[in-house]
Length: 197
Ligand SMILES: Nc1nc2c(ncn2[C@@H]2O[C@H](COP(=O)(O)OP(=O)(O)OP(=O)(O)O)[C@@H](O)[C@H]2O)c(=O)[nH]1
Ligand SMILES: [Mg+2]
Image (cartoon, rainbow, N blue to C red):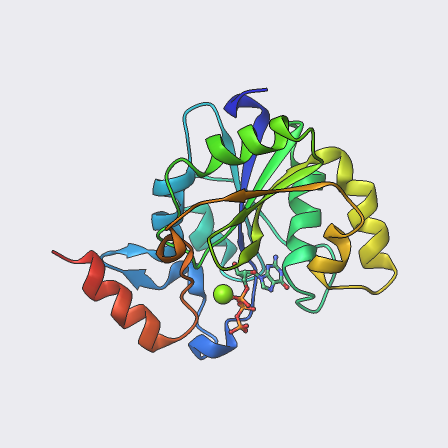
């Protein structure tokens, strides 16, 4: 498969409580909404892209991309957004990224695809030397039924769901910083200092 077989779905549907409820994808960082930084890094020619957001859909739509909301009410967490993405995508693969990781590696899609194919896995999750990043994952869209069942049973825990499938671990050595996620105003401030000249 190629990058043309991938739909990138950026999750921007959380409540951002640690950010005082501000819509994290839209907060400006170095002159651009944070989600723009994610798109700039991860989007590749040939890939389809969509945004999953539960607030400010109009503003997200101004980025020129389709915007979809969770189908399950009540901010049930990233898996609710993943289910929508898999439901709406028409490609065989879906790449999930959060809107609050503005330094993701530019070769993310390439490497996750290579890992998925090398291990003949159902999914490939990004890892650095220390930890897994469960919301940075390439998934076969055929897992949609499984994720819907899992959510319908009232489960939310991503790790539990991954346990039911063959998930390749794609390790980005020495790249922990690339997966840094911005959850608080202090972290946003720090990031801005890094990104501005
Ligand atoms: N679609 C969707 N995405 C979500 C939901 N909850 C979290 N996310 C996304 O998952 C990613 C990681 O979540 P967190 O960093 O915990 O973000 P958050 O839940 O908005 O923030 P906190 O309230 O501070 O925990 C972010 O991209 C969020 O937008 C949800 O209920 N639906
Ligand atoms: Mg976060």
